[in-house]
Image (cartoon, rainbow, N blue to C red):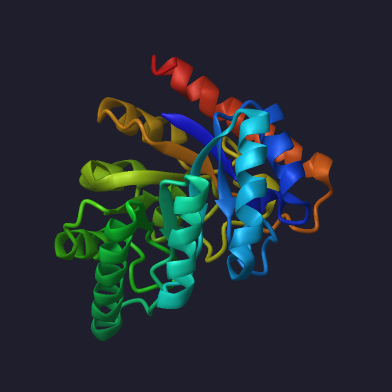
Length: 265
């Protein structure tokens, strides 16, 4: 497994600071945030300007470009995201499902949209991943399985995020066992309680919440998963750099210890 961090944790700071801090925290790679309003890291409306800087920072810091997070399924926005991915060498684009929970028409619309985008991903030679998300059409294991059954493209996979599954009232470890064969990316973070949001940024650091992340990583390891495991902490845009670095380092230390305990590192 490759340990990375999403640059959105450093959304209040420039991309150079994000790369440097993630490297100092000991990560293998980085997931570049293209999330409007949460960061100004990969701005897709001017991705041609951003791409050379991203490639240079990755080379300077020895960080693998593991993924990009771009939540929109808008075809034009996603087209730009895929072009940017090709130009930078980013292999995976993570998006959200959108739609409305417990609405069959909404779920079918999401499936149709993701199917079309998977075809475009195949055209560009990148992988499109989607994750279950609280409040969206795909929000738990049953709805996730519906999507996976409908879209068989090798350019499509699951981005598994234990915090959303936890907040859907499920056991993330047991949920992962049901879908692990289709997992191509992992967004990892902890969570206290089962409220709608993931909580304060510091409480999203691995080991601070209620999720059995050791058990979660055990399932990934035993299943032979070798893809990215990217920390995704949101809500820290107003945090000073030192506070963001502390969260990144604490979470990475927990992941490293878990993998060492499992004999995976």
